[in-house]
View 1 (cartoon, one colour):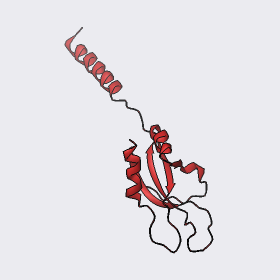
View 2 (cartoon, helix red, strand yellow):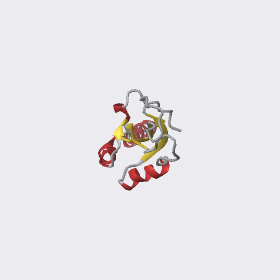
View 3 (cartoon, helix red, strand yellow):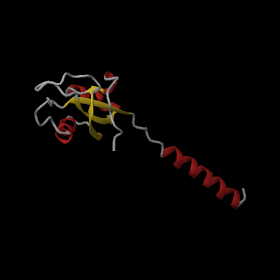
Length: 118
């Protein structure tokens, strides 16, 4: 083989090996939620950051989190629920750990109004 052909062959083999080694698993992301506990006519509810700690302490990697509404209608009455939820984007492999902490998939709330995660 000529030196130029050897260099070309070696380059091709190197590119093939490197390309094969850089393949990584794409994360399958999903969103989970939990009600923040807020009631009408009162301040509060659990903040996104405080509830996020529940997931992190359970070993769940949180990509992002935000406030949202469950999409249901509630009567206007002091002490009644607000429908506010905290929503978190996580890796699908962490769903069992999140569910063990009381979180549910947002797919169980078909009318939820969830803004894009920032």
